[in-house]
Image (cartoon, rainbow, N blue to C red; front, side):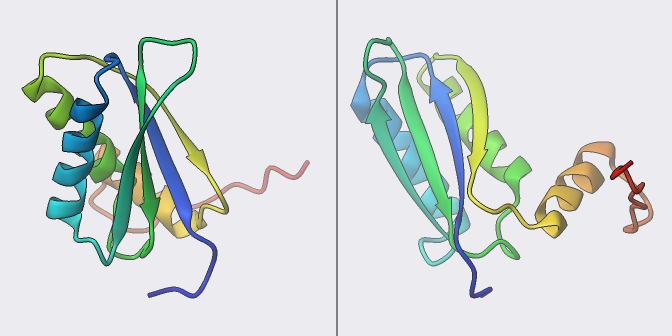
Length: 118
């Protein structure tokens, strides 16, 4: 496990039922392992949504794409929709590159980065 600050992946789900948010959290932890991720659900003040927040403890074992997919799967079980997601914390470049590789189904596991510092 990397010895660095944890990454947080949050997603809003369209329900004000905190129990549903907690069930989605259990799905995430059961699938990815409690040693790798810790998920919590919180009501969003002034909204009819619940925030599902996953603390990624091991960025080598947890994929952001997997997290998003698990939230969507959990929400669908209850007939609710998923809104936007966000990242918080220092996200390692390797974790972001893995999202690109997974989402684009790249054959090569190498992604060149352009120097955009201008």
